[in-house]
Length: 559
Image 1 (cartoon, rainbow, N blue to C red):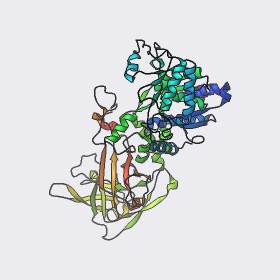
Image 2 (cartoon, rainbow, N blue to C red):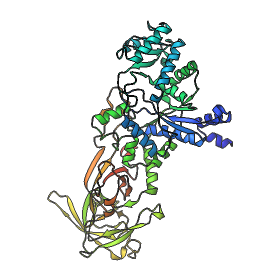
Image 3 (cartoon, rainbow, N blue to C red):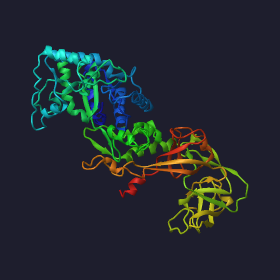
Image 4 (tube, rainbow, N blue to C red):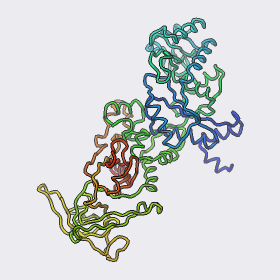
């Protein structure tokens, strides 16, 4: 491999290539994606999915999907189903059937018994508050539990009693016996098991004790003989504990490697905070298009290709940083620009009458479906005497550089004719209700012999043929770049009250009435939109704005 190619490898690829070169684990590469089924996946998980699946594929390996289901209080099969759906939608395929940490409950229990027998674990009768108080601080050592020196026989008997349901919740826990003065707080006799008399979504009431995540996670990796356990940086301080368990249990030595988690500005990524937004009714469920969940991005119109492109652009780093959400929006714009058909839609209609166009006449004008894709072909648009344009595309008293319709100005109607202002009407409140224009018959698009120069081009729909539509304009859910970074303020204070605008009287070209859930379009001059999967009905699509044509947010914020 050339020196240039070597330098292009990220740090995880360098580790993997070195392991392959040395024949470690038979040069086998086996990764896993281990979500907890207690919420919906978000864009940060999308990066982790991308990293685990693409790296394994690059080196001829495989990836497990394993649900780390060790907390029955918060877990649900609806989350399991949603996670599987999200991964499949992103275009990845796990090896074999989905796995569950609960598959290993008996084996993990055996590991715990083994540690007790070796003198590395004990049953503690203290309350959670007492245990926390004895932990010490990062600069001060903790103190030993009064139950730390119980005999192996007593610990085995009590642990079996915990499993059999002989004790109430909170009465006892199993702890690892490591070092209460260790500089790493995770090594100060961490909890391994707690009593939870709660029905599990898979094992039912078979168990009333459940392993702590830090005990189950690394050992599950080892049971599956995962060669490279790729985790976000928040688990870096947990690695010594995982390695300690592996060493003391003498099991398969999975190697954990940490990389920077994905953090986006203008949003929150904590499942707890996302759940609060859902439960408090701030958003319309886990798939609300303003959320950073994968299901929300899908409903908003994002494509799997754009999510994968974003993850590739973000890359792998060793330090946490904040990614500008504009990069995510760039990825979806870039993809939709290539694949989305261009269509006509008017969000805030203003009636235009072409005074010199024959009454009752309709002609069909040819327009291209996508200038970026010749194979997309063309379609026919109806054109008549009465049209709709955007209210913002007419100004009664326009400045010199206003290149849309105004007194004394001419503009081109996209794929149609050049028109010139004639007159307009107002209501009693002074609002413009109708604009009269004349058209130049010899200025038809593609056949223009008029010689007239029109600086502006407007989108439009035929009033006679237009269909009513509901359009939802989504914006950033938060007004602050880092809404959950303010220690003295609740992140909910920064919710953007104007993050959703629902337009009920939009006008769209007739072809759009047949649009199906998930179909994506570029509304000419307005942005990219998709048919909403939640509120659309047959013949009555609801359109969600995926993203604007340009990054208007940065301009609004003076960036």
